[in-house]
Length: 461
Image 1 (cartoon, one colour):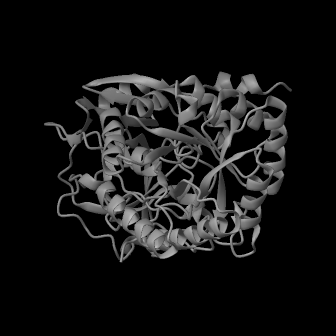
Image 2: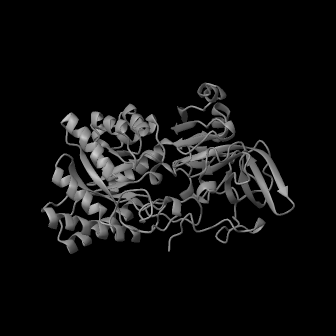
Image 3: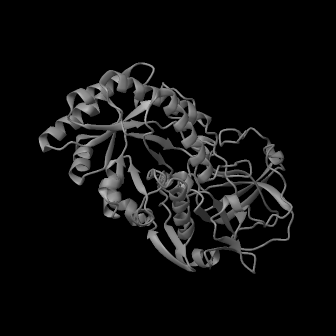
């Protein structure tokens, strides 16, 4: 049984911590599966990434700061491309997107999926060939669909009958025939937090399989012959470790594929199984390697196609978190350390829920380490919290840090590449942190820090 982020609720009291968290033999040790591949401890005990020490990063760029190991991100792209050499691997841009990341994934042969006009604008500005872009979204506007058609986006994943009508009207006006996939809600309860499980029936995405909407959408598109129906799409959730959900999903969506064939004599040539592949945030998480995922997913699809007497369609997958999540850590500076009546020790840092909302939103678990030095002190169970005016402003619920952690120390939290900067806010009017890419001992700014002037520039009152 694989662990998942919704499993360890933070009902544990005080200094006991969750059952899975063990006192480390060495509080300075880094668990390799949690950190970028080029993260180590230097001779002085400080954290080093791709040859550059975090003290130097903090001195140049300030804190908080998201630190991206560029070679790590690129190597994860290559791992997925090697594991899925004949399939299309779409990087899920919602995890984190900026022009520099678009260039990196494009250079590594990836495709890219976007979910809004803004993400599409970044994708195009970063140089992603439009034919390698897929456009998701449950409520695409006329303006967004117009931009996608004019840019020549490769696939539009249609999500409602209203969107089919909207897109068909725009296609007729332009005398084009866009390629589309139908997003199918397959009724699978993914083994993850309810807010990021996306294939059960009671949610906003896609066409219901059980209710008959999915087959009706497919037949309408085929009969009207304005849009080119390439295939079906299914996405069952996020931070998933078990492929059993993909097996059920593939079985149901390929059964729909067979229904379409029997009704209209057409075998759709493509199938997108989505993404949601989990990563390790703490010692309880055990993600599968890309080649293992590929082996399991191919076996599932081949088996179900044989049952339905279907030709195996061209497959696509959509990893986002699995590529960018482990490649980034967030670097903070400690401001206060507070022991609360022996119940718990709070380590307050200069960021918080504005740069990582996931702990508050999903009850997500993270790890942390003292990054600016090594320590000979004993391990102390602590809670890393932010500076915001909320008691739920928690970055790391439970972690062992050295008992001598003090104001001015740097603390690093790994696994923050996905859904941290992309979901960041200006709560309490705190400017969002920068993103710094490090490679071969050199750091470069790829997203600058927001300033108070940026905040005031939007305030026209």
